[in-house]
Amino acid sequence: MAVKIRLARHGSHKRPYYRVVVADARSPRDGRFIEEVGRYNPLTNPKTINLDLEKIADWQSKGAQLTDAVAALVRAAEAGPKTETVVKKSKKQLAKEAEEAKRAAEAAAAEAEATEE
Image 1: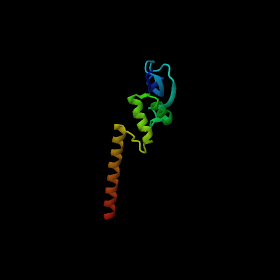
Image 2 (image 1 turned 120 degrees about the horizontal axis):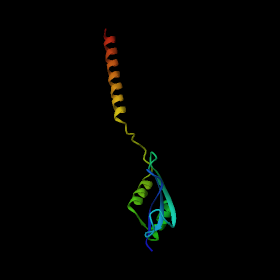
Image 3 (image 1 turned 90 degrees about the vertical axis):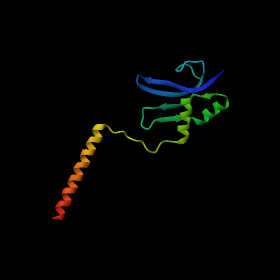
Image 4 (image 1 turned 90 degrees about the horizontal axis):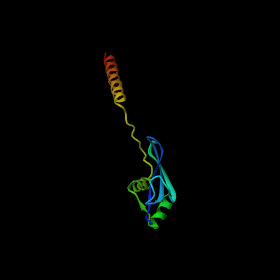
């Protein structure tokens, strides 16, 4: 029997939530599985990865194969959580910050002129 450690998708439309499961390779993606060994939520910031690495290693020793996606999650879980998260700003936010910086520079220049006199 070929056993794989793979993702099973749960959650509603456009709101995915994954369980990391050990399943027979012939069973459907979200169908019957042997054991759940972790969970993965890509929608949180930072992404939530909860894996039982001991169970995964035990299943691998028994011959279970990791899928590419699960292998990437295992590497990320072993590396630990990211310390920095980059927040992307919208074009409006960037323009607003540029305008505020310009006003601050003008105010500083005007104040420097006033102190010279």
